[in-house]
Amino acid sequence: MAAKPLRVGVVGTGFGRYHMEGFSQVPGVEILAICDLNKAEAQQFASQYGAKYVFTSAKRMFAMDELDAVSIAVPNALHAPMTLDALNQGKHVLIEKPMTITPADAQKMADAAKKAGKLLMVEQALRFRPEAQLVKAYADRGEFGDMYYARSTWYRRKGWPHLHMPPDGTLGRGVWFLQKRLAGFGALGDIGVHLLDLAWYLMGTPKPVSVSGQLFRQVAVPELKAKGLPAEVEEMAAGLIKFQGGKAIMVEVSWDTYTQPAMECFLMGNRGGASVFPARVFRGSDIDETVDIETHYNGLPIETAFSHFIDCIRDRRKKCIAPADQNVTLIRMLDALARSAKSGKEVRL
Ligand SMILES: NC(=O)c1ccc[n+]([C@@H]2O[C@H](COP(=O)([O-])OP(=O)(O)OC[C@H]3O[C@@H](n4cnc5c(N)ncnc54)[C@H](O)[C@@H]3O)[C@@H](O)[C@H]2O)c1
Image (cartoon, rainbow, N blue to C red; front, side, top):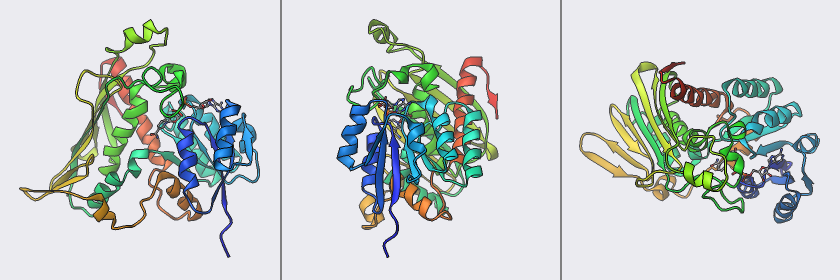
């Protein structure tokens, strides 16, 4: 007998449209409902993905008995209240990054998931990149030895959300990205959250002990002002996070810099190391190899965040790749980096 379909509702039709596309590719999943304040857009995606219901109120959608799980892609400040509401209504939740904008809310969300006995997973998209999973497999087999340092970087040119992105919702559309109250962070919470998390995950999530950071807003402010847009958040963040056992990660991200655009994650261990984009492993004193993704996966299906979320709901013993508990620590590190920039001092965790 075929398993009962798992019924999912998606909130947000900006990046949320990629959630719909992702779920539409997972066998046994029905996209039952779509919610957005923009009803016309919600309706448009509902017809594209065959969703029966359209909502403009997430609260009302979460109250539907037929829904098993929801995924949420709305402005960052709404992540905590919506997640808590959905968990209270007995739904499994996939929440976009950053999980939320304060460590206290992150803890509340993780606690609420435990209390409800539901899965809360964070859409840390880079953890699911095939290159990342490949490097993780080498790291987990101990091929790099003790991993002591990583440098993780994302430099963009003209890459502010809203200001430089298309207005159609395919990428970083909302003006809320520029508003501290709604976004919480600037580039740190938007792309720093990915790059720090990737290095930290691949190093085995060591325990942070201190953070020293700096935030910058040097390039695009005149352009924002000329367009009458808010200039409330940082466009660049740099930080050094130190971990137990003398390990460290250097993270640097910027939405706009006068330099070579780059997305890189370099990892160093005492017996080997890796770079992630593209996946390359280094072992021994003079050997390095570029690992071919196709050969590595050898025709096996590559998990996406969406297939993994569904698998983890179906099998609650399955180890979640991006669990809420770990993300609480990630949000604490981001918050500490911002506090360090403000105070000019190292922040102990
Ligand atoms: N994982 C990734 O790589 C990735 C990429 C892009 C965005 N994101 C995240 O996704 C989230 C959304 O970003 P986006 O780019 O889609 O922004 P967006 O501005 O394009 O879309 C947000 C959508 O939320 C809707 N919305 C706002 N308030 C709502 C409410 N109360 N109820 C229902 N709908 C509401 C808006 O109408 C809009 O359609 C953010 O947290 C962002 O960080 C993640």
